[in-house]
Image 1 (spheres, rainbow over the protein chains, first blue to last red):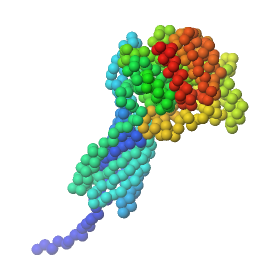
Image 2 (cartoon, one colour; image 1 turned 120 degrees about the vertical axis):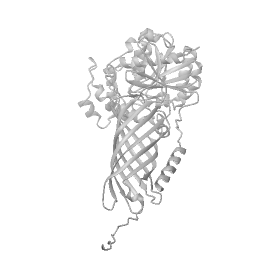
Image 3 (cartoon, rainbow over the protein chains, first blue to last red; image 1 turned 60 degrees about the vertical axis):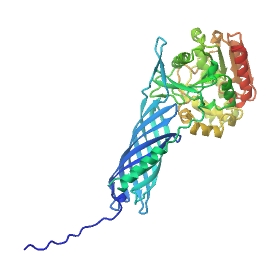
Image 4 (tube, one colour; image 1 turned 90 degrees about the vertical axis):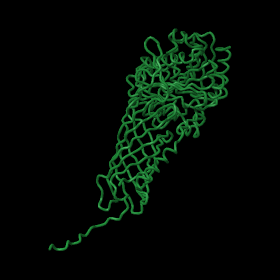
Length: 180
Length: 338
């Protein structure tokens, strides 16, 4: 007769999923240069965090698009690395450095003229620029929903724009969803 | 499940919250396109009464600024009621797109302008055009019109406070003005950095013209009342509700264009024979007002006018908009399209 198995002590973590997840996705409305509307989706991964999970080093990337009517359609991919800190009651702060690419396409019909003076109408292929800069954010974790609405504001430098670094501002309003 | 439900709600919210694009300066019926040439995509905004088939091709100053500073003013708005205006954003200026400047030359800008004219003629085959340039745009349009074949594509020329004479003799007048006014720091700047030989025209303006222009501005050599040129409301519109880009302007201007500084086109203006209008603010120091009469006298055109604005500096279109409008509109009605 074998001895009765001992009951193992199992730690039950009853904290909301919001605090457990290391992966998250997000979506937001973008105001590029504050006036050019667009949208973006993103992914984040907490690669290192403190035992109490209040501080984390987070990597991620955002993919977005904005429209400047008649002037420009921009598509950007911005990988980021940053810190996120969260209070127990839900308030969250973040700071991140972003570096990626912006592809800008003229948003109207384009013409070129060949050497013989013939006019050709075409769709412009646009220009790809390096795109980098910091962002600051603030959010609030709604644990019951597993959702963190946030606002981020940042600056990016785009280069080379005729051999210059061109300054742009961006504001994103959105929400992060912690994945199970 | 909460996470998935939240994600779905978020997606619905974002899709329903489409924010319409808002560019206040585009009016119904306006047209917009790009001219692409040698690595640059240059916007052209055609506004106003272009269906009249009487179109002003506007060439902004700088080099490297934008048309954004002009269109808001009563002077241009009233012109647009009667005529079409095609605002061309030049290479490496305003909202034009491109990666590299390459070596910027007057010749390159003349070539760009030629392409823009060709596209305009293609899009508006029944239209007639008048070329209109301000400041650096005055130099560029004059350079263009010196070729008689190109000149024949226009019915008239309007030059306002044009940098027609950028020789050192003329540039030194602005330097002397600043020194007379005793602007702090200017004496050291002009003593240590300013090179502009009035005999040989050897100069280093490409390196120092921005600082020079700031000293001229500080000395009051741009405008009689600067607040008339760009108000707070207009700045806000340019930043938040416009197709133009003030940040681009501050980054770019003035551009380092070779074969520009040190030149004087006045002796060549006899080649310009189309109806011409010369406009100048009598307080303009940066494109010194002393050249106004010389430009007028040098023209080869038999139909020519000059209007001097006594209460304006470099930007009479902003400081005296009514008088400016009257000068341009009457010239167009009486000399170009009688």
